[in-house]
Image (tube, rainbow, N blue to C red):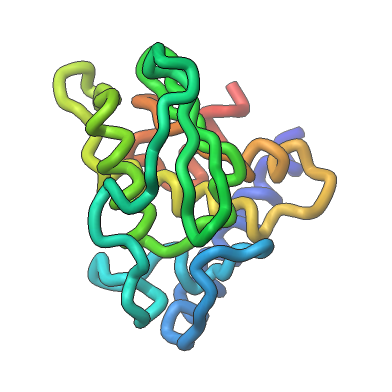
Length: 179
C-alpha cells in the first residue's frame, strides 16, 4: 500500500510539472466534455482562456431554487443545465468538470455565496468565491488526469465546496481521503 501511495504522489507531482509547462499554451472551449488542463491554474489569477469570459454577474446563470427550500438548485451555463445542491456547510455541483473558465467559475461561486455562505476551515471565516473556484479547478485538474473507471475520477467529476478542502493542494486532498 505504501508503494502505491508513493507512486500516486509521484504521478501527481509529474502531472503538476506537465501542467506548469502546458499552462503557457493558448486554448479555447469553456464548456467541454474533457477538461482543458491549461485552464486549471492560470498564472497571476488571470483567466487562462485569454478570451473574454461569458459571465458578467451572478444573475447570468439564472440560478433557480427547485424545491423552494434553498437546497436544490439548477443553473445554466452556455445553454447547459447544472445541478447545485446545498447541504449543511457544503455546495455539491454535479458535472462541475465541464465548466473550466476560472472567471466564470468564480461568478458561479458568487451566486452560490449569495444564497448560502460556506464556513472556512478555521471555523470563523467564510469561503470566498475565489477560494471556492480554486478548489473547483483542482477537482477539474484531477478529473482530467485520472484514468477512466477510477473511483477517484467518478468522485472528481463533481465538486463539493465545503470547509475541509479549503486551501489544500491535490496531494493534501489525496492524503486526507486515505485516512
